[in-house]
Length: 323
Ligand code: NAI
Image (cartoon, rainbow, N blue to C red; front, side):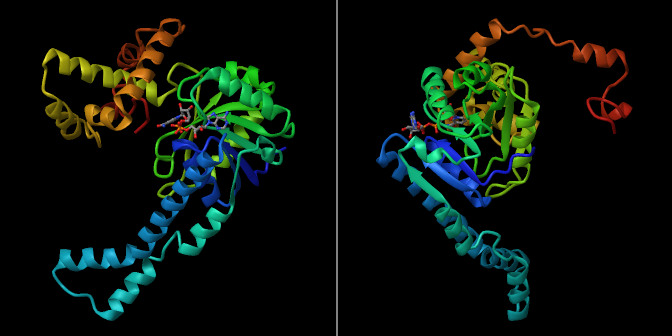
């Protein structure tokens, strides 16, 4: 039976929770946004209001700014007819009315019981296994048996949290990326005992959604330290720090080199500044210590194997993809 999601619970109205609530509301879901104190709930709602106002303003001004850009690029003035045609073409996707309706769909609360009718609950509270586990156990006594629980944890073990929740079959990780209003990726992490049906339901849910800019992109990821993006990113960032310490190049050159030579939108050290060095260190320390006990193959063999098979990439028509 496919899960029909009409109302989503979001627990935690901080940096991530407020934006996650906003994305669901923009996609027509009713949202119950819960935090422990009313001032945090109100803070979260204010963030959503500001973000939605910016979104509506961007869309309202889009036609005018495209007309200005076209006029300055071509060095001409568009006729009133051309301007009207441009305005018709660039209709606001998110109108003022649409964002107001989205905001009205979010109900703030401090009571966990208000999440009773939710078919899907995403948790985005403090990164502490015991606090999260306790919250889910409490929710288990409140929500209906088909409600799917999801954690936005950056690094904590999903299967362990699933057991603590008391409903491991309907529990998974949904790891959003900051800011979820513009980054579309959601890593979907199945626990040891998560039902395939719950994973399908959540994949379908996200596949029908979009954020301010893009369709959401749910990607299924096996449970492992750092999940997918932070694991790969962590290895790359660490190499950048090593190059800096070895004096291979100064910070600015490392960032410029990765942007100009590898097509990165942002250099590894600039990215670390954006994430916050304390957060980057926390994630890196966690992934490194968890990887020590992770039973994965430490030295990847995939390149040796594929080269031996003649699968050299585009030039042979076959690599990781077929060309
Ligand atoms: P935050 O500190 O901005 O917000 C957490 C909110 O949860 C606070 O408003 C706090 O009052 C509330 N809270 C704490 N315990 C609660 C409880 N028992 N019930 C309800 N609300 C409670 O934290 P942030 O950055 O939003 O992170 C939340 C989660 O998302 C963490 O697990 C974090 O690892 C994860 N995450 C964070 C990312 C980021 O870039 N900030 C990116 C991806 C995941």
